Length: 143
Image 1 (cartoon, one colour):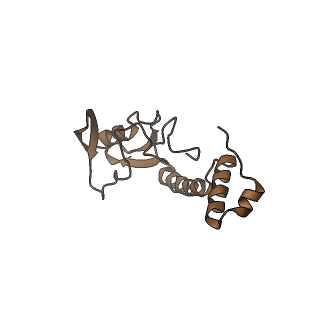
Image 2 (image 1 turned 45 degrees about the vertical axis):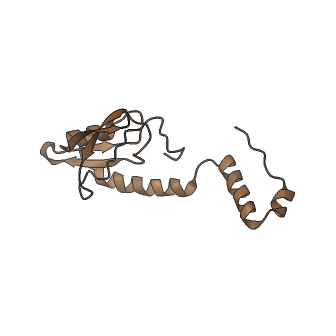
Image 3 (image 1 turned 30 degrees about the horizontal axis):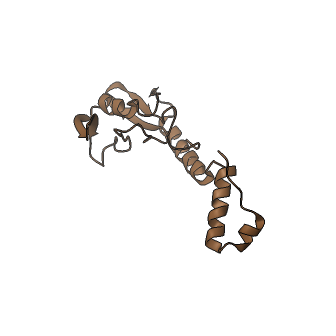
């Protein structure tokens, strides 16, 4: 993937808005990691690590779209329902927005929903299940 870099003259002649767009495009090309997104994720990872410190944890690993989040809902006792999306049938959890599982999101498409680990306590078994971003994550290099 290559990009024609603007010349210095092009940047000087461009309006401020166009110049800004060219610079953002250039930075995206030479620095593909969005540092702001990365720093936000690091902060969220620190919070998640405190949630699981000292606990027995089962970490679910797998490819994006393989069903890790849906499995956590099932094991945690969420009611599951079959839903049709056009010609595609999926199984989706039914839970309130106030539920401890509300942050464990699912999707019928093979695209990322989970960007950092999410811990879900299963008190009956005294363990914690952790949802994780998938292998071949579709959200970008920061994940």
